Image (cartoon, rainbow, N blue to C red; front, side, top):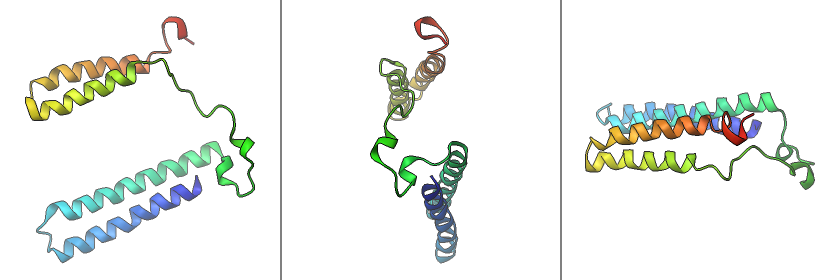
Amino acid sequence: MKIESWMFGGLGLFFIPVGVFYGIATRWTEPVGFMGLWLAGGLGCLIGLYLGYTGRRIGMRPEDSMDAEIHEGAGEQGHFSPWSWWPFSLGLATAVGFLSLAVGFWLIYFSAGFALVALIGWVFEYSRGDHAH
């Protein structure tokens, strides 16, 4: 993950000075441009730091090595729940929350409650029932 962390960190370090240059060029009268560039730079640095930290924690992956074989990447890649309905519920609650911005703000109260229930259900789905650890 070293390449990815350097790439995103480099993007972050590119966008921040570009945002300063944009602000100087517009005499800081256009607030969306330089702030958007600074936020993009901050996001690039944030992702780069996360990937660098994760790369040091888990070590080299097969795709990081130039002489890796295909079979080295075989096997379990993570833990996913194909039978879980909680991500769909959380996505539906989020969609209703964004819909409330256009339809009416009162709808966000229902969507926030539903999203909270869906998020708690997704986090604790392995803590109870048949799949408890």
